[in-house]
Image 1 (tube, rainbow, N blue to C red):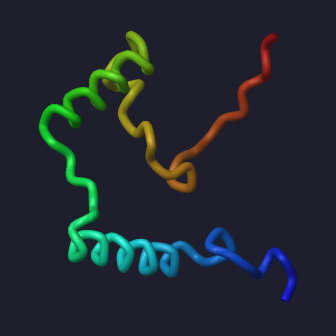
Image 2: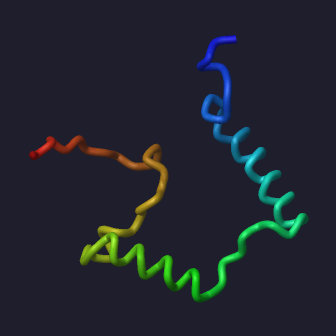
Length: 79
């Protein structure tokens, strides 16, 4: 077995989701899963807004979406 054939990252996306889903369900059943309070969610949203700066809502839409579903354009690095 080669190193590339091992681990979570080498699995296809469906298999990873199945495993992660089982872990989430188990944590909820055990009572150790984190559930966001409205205050925590508000704070996370505030931090996200601060991090993204003054970008317009159209620019921010899609942040966190999979790169697979987007056409990407390579930008040159500017020091």
